[in-house]
Image (cartoon, rainbow, N blue to C red; front, side, top):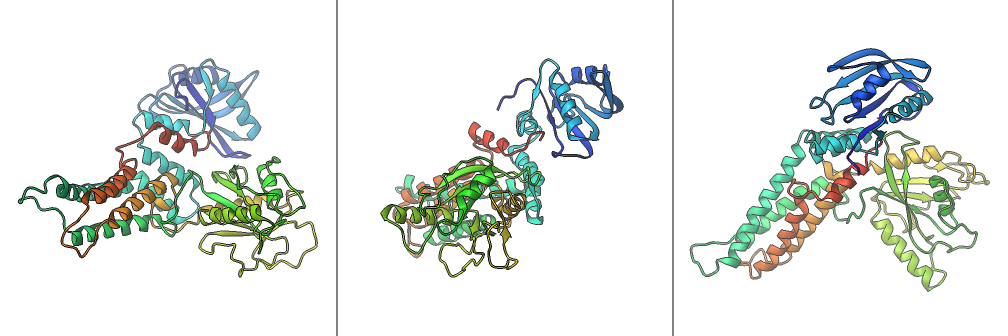
Length: 447
C-alpha cells in the first residue's frame, strides 16, 4: 500500500442519503481547503462554506483538523454536503484534480493512523470489525480490540507460555545442577491445559480448524447439476466457471473473492468456493477423488450454501456439516418446483432474482461464528490462536502427566516455542509487513 501524497475518498456508503462526506488527508489538504472552499488559513474547527464546482458552488460544512489533531495525524479536511451520489463523485473529482491529491486505497486512512502512531494494529482491526458488526458479540469483540483488553489477554498468554517454557528448558540446560528444579509433568500439564482451554474459548466452535485465509470461506454445496456453477457466475458477475448439463463438469474447487458490500454496505467480502457435485457414487475414479476433496473443503469452510433445485434439502445426506452456518438456496427458481418450505431462498441465477438477498444472507452467516472473543471474528487472530493451540497440543503429547519427570524436554520446548511464535504477532512482538498489508486490505475505501 502506498503511503505518500495526499489522499481523498468518499467515506459514506454508496447511494443517496441525507448527507455525504469526503475525507482528505495529507500535505495538500490545506490546498484543497483553499481552492475548493476559499479557506486560506483554517484553524481547527467547523466552517459553513461552499464548495466550488466549476462555475457553480455547493453549500457544505468543512471540518478542519490540523496536523497532530486528526485521525491520521496529518492535516485533514472533511467536507459534508447533500447526500447525492452524483454530487459526491463531482466533489471527489474536484479534490483529486488538485496537484498532489490522489484517490485513497482501501484502509489507507487507518493505515496512516497506524503508521503515524495514532492507532495500534489491533485498534485498527477493531475499527474494521466495529464497522462490519451486525451482532452484539461482534461489537463486544471490536471493543476488546479498541480498548486494549484483548491485547492484555494475549500478553498474559505469552507471559504464561514464556514462564512454562523457561522451566522446561531449565530441565535441558541445568540437568547437572541439583539446585535447579524443572517444572513437574503434573504442574505443566495443568498449566498448559488451562491455557489451552482459554484459547479455545476465544476461538469458539471451530477451534480445531486450520484457517488459511483472511476472509471467511463460503462453499457452494449440492448434488451434480444443482446449479452451483451457474449461481457462482451470477454472484461474481462474470463467467468464471464452465457450466454444462453433463454431471461431473466441475472437478476442482474454484475459489474467488466475492464482494458483498454492494448488497449490504460494510459487509466486506468472502471467498466463494464452487465445489464438485456430491452424489451417492462417483462417476469415475477422478470424480470420486473430486468428491473427497470437496468434502475436505466443506469441513474447513465458514459458511455452507446448500443448493437444491428441488427444494427438498434432505438432511439425511452426509454432504452437509451441521455444525456450520448454512444458507439453503433453492436454485433454478424459474422452473416448476414443489412449494417453498419457508426455510430456503429461491433464486434464479439467469435473471438475477434475489441475488442481493442471497448476498445479505451469506454475509449474516459469515458473521454467525460462535465464540466469546476476537478469535471468533478476526481471521488473523483466529489463525494465530489456532497455531498456538496446535503448538500447545504438540507439547502436551510429548510427556506423561503422571511421570516423575519430563523425559524429552527438548520436544516439549519445541512445541511451546511454536506456540509463542504464533502469539508473537498478537502480542505486538512481531508485525511483518505482509500482515499489515492484509489487515488494511480488509477495510473499505474512505476508512
